[in-house]
Image (tube, rainbow, N blue to C red; front, side, top):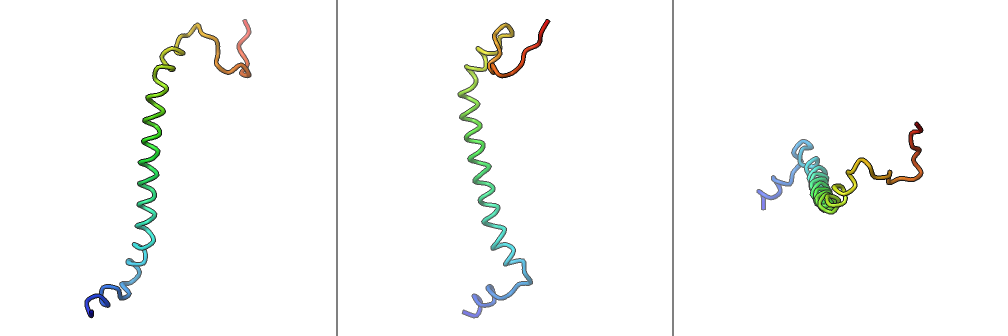
Length: 70
């Protein structure tokens, strides 16, 4: 048991910093993974629509947006 108490003894603050930083890093990585998955899903869903709307002669999608006058 002496080894465990030595391991858990005060180590100058770096061990407490790890107890705080480790969960923050894990949550950041999980959020990054989730964002990548969503971007990948949205990117594949928008590809067919983006190809059909890329025609320069089509009307603007947003009707509230002003158009240029000749």
